[in-house]
Image 1 (cartoon, rainbow, N blue to C red):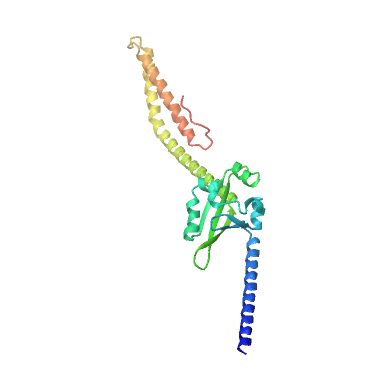
Image 2 (image 1 turned 90 degrees about the vertical axis):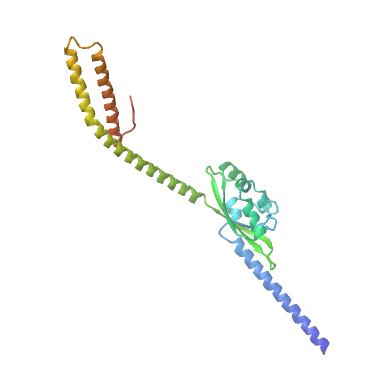
Amino acid sequence: MCEARDHESGSELRARLNAAQKDLEGIKALLTAVFDAGPFPMWISDDKGTCVTVNEANRQKWGLTDEAVVGKYNLFDDQVMQEQGHIPLVESVFRDGRTVVFQNVYDPVRFNQLTGANRDLKTVIEATIVPVKNSRGKVTHAIIQQKDLTGITLAQEEKDKAIDRMKQAQKMETIGVMASGVAGEINTPLNQIRAVFKCTLQDLDRQETAPQGMSEKFRDAVHQVDRISGVINQLRLFGQTDCPSFKVD
């Protein structure tokens, strides 16, 4: 009778183990399906950073095959991440169990070589690396999700450039207003100086006994005043938005 109970207990144990195994396989299949059907390119690495699987979005986005990356691509060997200083972050994922986020920037030539694409602008990829730990807290795998931020980044850069151009235009407008105001303040006394010089020059021209060379000096003074007046007129024009340039003769 005891042997029958022991046999029955053993059968129940095996049945529970089998059921648990089936449940585990079901959960694994579900997670695999969720991973493979994810909307963002993702892949999984082992504890050494080597790719062990990729999802369908990854294959479609970058045009990569499993044969090209599984068992071959390694995070720590990525030259772009090495050049852009991201390796310490990657190391912290496997060493400290941290989740990290960073961006890789690819020039068109390198990106096209890696993916077979035909882009003529830089490509910005945001990578999120999440560690997967076992029951003892040891990192056994990492899930890497990638987002193509190229469009967003380029749009932001264009927005920043537009803002800079607007600020520059505002500065130039302010300078134009100041220049126009300064020109107006200087022009009035300058016209008075010119009038005095011209009157004096006319008097000297009528006098036969004028000091030698004095007329020439006053003519030169009038010329210099006219030159300054020309600069002032350009300053006044500079305050107008349709003024193309500023020139000093």
